[in-house]
Amino acid sequence: MAILGRGASLPHKERCHERKWHSQDSQKANPYEGWRRRLYLMLEPTARDSPGLSITNRLIAVLIILATALTILETEPLVRALAPSAFVTAEAALALAFLVEYVARVIAAGEDPRYRGLAGRLRFMVSPWAIIDLLAILPFFLTMGAVNAFALRLLKLIRLLRLARLGRFSNAIGDLYQAVRGRRYELTVSLMVAVALLIVTSSVIYVLEASHQPEAFGSIPRALWWSVATLTTVGYGDVTPITAAGQLFAGLTAIVGIGMIAMPTGILAAAFSDAMQRRRDQAENDNNG
Image (cartoon, rainbow, N blue to C red; front, side, top):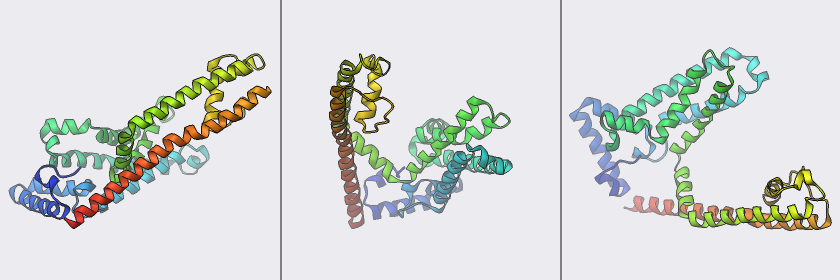
């Protein structure tokens, strides 16, 4: 979340001076605002004068990775049986840490003009990142005393969303989003081609194999599974054509599938490369400015 207002249009060095001036002025005017400002700088990577993550955000990133690892390991009964109390203790400590972080982010959000005041804080709490923060906390408190309930065990999987929070600490996620958004027309066309190929190949294999394998190719919806597996070059082998015409068509379908996968892959790779080049050019302009 970058500093908004006049400083947002200035070169990097001038923005740094603007932020420093703003911070000193806030501390003199109101001690609470100065404290909130320091908290904001610790939690929001893009608000810092220097590139990279603050120590606070590095610690949070480590905790996110640790929490995700614990969530994965506890699904293995043999591992959890070795030290069940240790998992509960670690989960409680991590939940408390994320709760403190969530409260701190709500407080620090007031530095953004969009989230000032009570209404602004409520607006921040329903923003996508704040909801992810909240979902990272809720599973522990909701599963206390009822860990074996199926619905609550399923809810605990939401904790894997903590991985998404790492995107906040990296510009790569934003670059990827912009890359996809900028090439949405090309991606839509490639998706339409893929859907058309699925329909055509499943229809043809239905005609060729339905009378020989009605249980596998007795209808176009049944044949659709084979088309998906073949066009994506997965080839599970659970359903295969047995006629000569069907096998020949299967080979052609697999070859066409390579091109179908390559189309969106090439589009995304080119778009992401362009986005990274724009970021490098912008960084050079900021440094030279």
